[in-house]
Amino acid sequence: MRYRIHLCTRNGRDAYPAPDVRALMERVAGTYVLAGINLEIESLVRFDYEGCQPFYEDRAFPQFSLQQTPRGVIPVVFVSRIPSLVAPFPIGGYASFGGISVNGQLHDLIITHELGHFFGLAHTHDCFYGREQLDRCEETGDLLCDTPPDRGPAGATTTSTAGPLPPTASCACERAGGTSGRPCSS
Image (cartoon, rainbow, N blue to C red; front, side):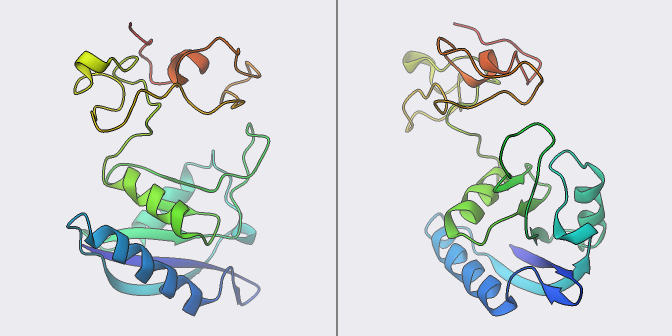
């Protein structure tokens, strides 16, 4: 699969040095080749965007990047920071299945993680299909039986105005009040 690096610039300066971004993507490609996915660079393009700090909640930003990417090419975007209106910390990156990978840090694990979402992998604590059950792991939780049930990151907060997660919450969708629109099922 071909990918296009979108590198944000501010006042004529890249958010990250282009040789560092290329080297990082080569390392990430080396990881994905182990899974039978051959990532190949299509090009590196530069763009300007509001200080290279698009807010996580800014839905126009992914559309802007997608419009600058040829059909069939993965857009991998690098910005200097991804602030959020609701998270108490900057977001490392985000991605959508078959959509876009936006990265606010230059780190192998973050890029590998976000591209995993692009390829359709969920978080191990995802509850869109209900709370994971060992005897039905192929149809509950993250739909993968090779990962143990995961109740989510300790100390995380919701993406709503509800505040901190209750310590008794047992999966991410219960914590966030069913963010997927589907409550957890036992």
